[in-house]
View 1 (cartoon, helix red, strand yellow):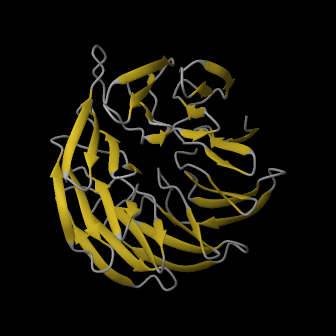
View 2 (cartoon, one colour; view 1 turned 180 degrees about the horizontal axis):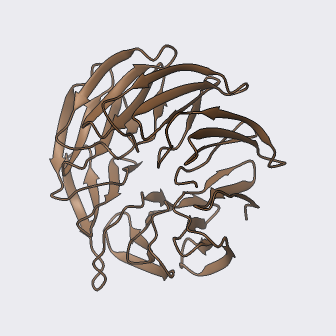
Length: 312
């Protein structure tokens, strides 16, 4: 079972599994390169690759650092409880959020804790980083900016809604959906919400994380739709209906939106119009998000299969 999303690096696909493994697959052939046992299932945590090391967290709260070539474990770090956040590597630090309400910064080579920042709720979202600041949209209903050097809060903006998605940053704005059925745009310089989007009819939560391209914010909703929103104004541009909730986060490339749905289908849409270009039926829910690299698109399904397609 895969809820983790794949990542592509140097001709290899890395993904965490519900079978308590981190897996490395050859991108071109689909052949297994190695498996690393995490000890506990890997949930939604997506691996990060940097400096020849793969980082992934499991539902036992453990962050693992693994040699990217050999699959040999390098170090582990135990948080207080389960982790669904994905690690992010920036210079010499790896950041990870935990359901113990804490964002951790660790030394990327040794796993030693550098600092920790405590919030008022589980840190489900993956941090976004810009100009030395980590941004998290939290389960404690706040969008927070945390300084990377020392873990001190720079500011926070109340959203009034539980947030499980990760912020997408474009320019000076951060975009994220909430369980309050809204999508927010936060101006990070003005430190305020500049618009809110809510579908006029279908009021459902957003768990999918947004992608931003060509002035459009795209994300999936539990209303079974993919939504495209004007990044400047928050006006809805188009929706595309699937047959089940969309928890997969989109990837955008060459004017195309790639996204999975829990209806078991992988969709490719035109970014400008929302028109379906093609679809593939996997036969099992696709809550994993697609990865794009080397002219290929990779996505994993909840029945334990990894699919690779040529990108358009």
